[in-house]
Amino acid sequence: MPENIPQNAGYMVAAYIVTAIIVLAYAASLYRRTRGR
Amino acid sequence: MTLASRGRAVTAVALLLLVGVYVRALAFTPLERFQGAAQKIFYLHVPAAWSAMLAMGMVGLASVLYLLLKDQRFDRFAAASAEVGTAFCVVMLTTGPLWARPVWGTWWAWDARLTLTLFLFFLYIGYLLLRQAVGDPPGARARYSAVLGICGTVLLPFIHLSVYLFRTLHPQPIVLKPSAPSLPGVMLVTLLYSFGVFTLLYIGFVMQRYAVGEESAHA
Image 1 (cartoon, chains in turn red, green):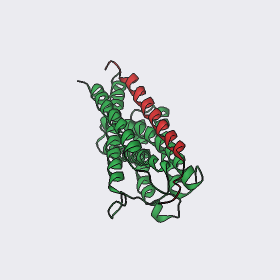
Image 2 (tube, each protein chain N blue to C red):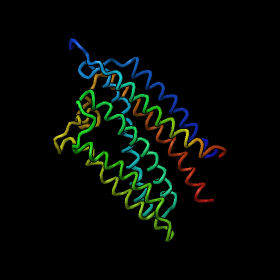
Image 3 (cartoon, rainbow over the protein chains, first blue to last red):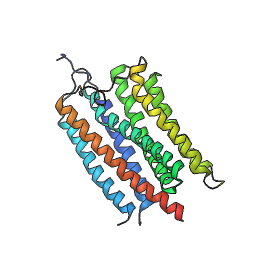
Image 4 (cartoon, helix red, strand yellow):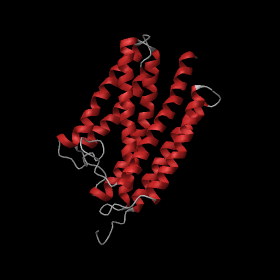
C-alpha cells in the first residue's frame, strides 16, 4: 500500500456531478417531449 | 399503457438504481491504492462507454434491417438509438478527461483510442445532422442515415481493439477481454451493477425517444 494515496477526490466529484447533470437533463428532455402521451 | 409511459417507468427505475450506483461506488467500494478517488470515475466512464457503443451497434443493426426490409420502424429505432447514444457519448467524453487529468497528467491525448472515440461522437452528431438536413425524396433520409449508421458500427471493433493495435495511454480492457476480469470482486460487482443500470437507462431512453419519433411520423 503506498504511503500516500493521491488526493484527487475533486475530479471524482466533478465526474459524478457532470454525469448526473447530463443524464438528468436528457431524462427531463425526453419527459418533456413525451408528457401527456 | 403507451410505449412512452412504459419508457418513462423504465427510466424512473433506472434513475433510482443509478442512485444506488452512486452510493455503492462512493461509499461501499474501496479506493484504488495508486489512483486514489479518481479511479471511481471508472464506474461511470466505462458503463457510459458501453452504452454509447451499444447504441451505435443497435443503430447499425437497425440500419441493416431497414435497408433489407424497408420497414420505417427500424429507421425510427435507429434514430432513437443514435440520439440516446450521443448522450452517453457526452458522458464518456466528459468523464474520461476528468479521470485522465489526475492519472495521466493530461486532459487529453491524441492517441488511437481517444481519437477514435471522439470520431464516434462526431459520427453521432453527423448522423443526427444528416437526419435533419435530408428531406426529399421520400425515403432518402432513412437510406442515407442507414449507410452512415452502418459506417459507425464498423468503427466499434476498431475502437475496442485500438488499445491492442496501437501504443496508447488508455488502459487495455479489464472486463471485456478473453481472460477473466482482472479486478477485485467488490469492484467488479460495482462495475457490473453499473453496466446493468446504464443498459436499463439506454432501454428506457430509447423507448421514450422511439415514441417521440413514432408520433412525429404519424403527425
